[in-house]
Length: 197
Image 1 (cartoon, rainbow, N blue to C red):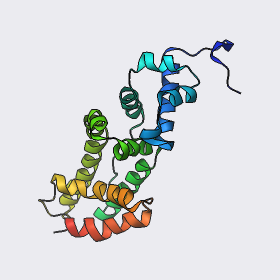
Image 2 (tube, rainbow, N blue to C red; image 1 turned 30 degrees about the horizontal axis):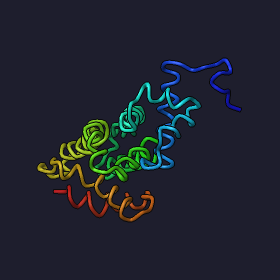
Image 3 (cartoon, one colour; image 1 turned 45 degrees about the horizontal axis):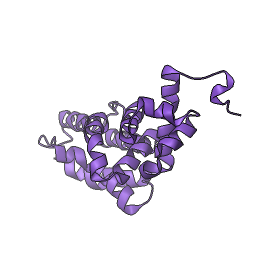
Image 4 (cartoon, one colour; image 1 turned 120 degrees about the vertical axis):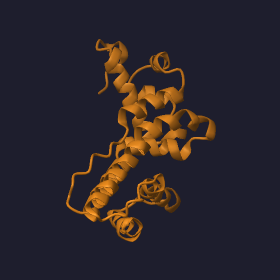
């Protein structure tokens, strides 16, 4: 049973802020950008709406801070001995990130925001998710070049965009969850032919 605000254990400072940011992420990943309301976030954090507005003057400001706390991370790819093995490891970690709470929240913003609202998130998403993910892909490609498995000129932005673009396309246009089998096909039928000498 939740305690009311006046019942003696009132949260303040960073504890309350974490609760509000967590409630915002929960709303983003369940009801999406359009369904998220400041009132709903306040209820989810078990605080008053005024406490939310004191810290974040707008829905965009709140969501921007919430996303930064939960950007899905794609880890460094260990050297598994071959291009296919490295790519499979990477795309499966990308899938995990895509379906994490932070990934679901991020996708709701990308999928549902209108142009004006999305504008404030573009830099944040590029720096926090897109560029680090592309760097992981290019790390695998460069390692493959060093092994002689990848043609030397395969280090451009287009190469780094292929897997994330296909994942987003299949998810958004196909309207279904991307499976591991889908990603193995991307590796075997798209990435390997694209990269090999």
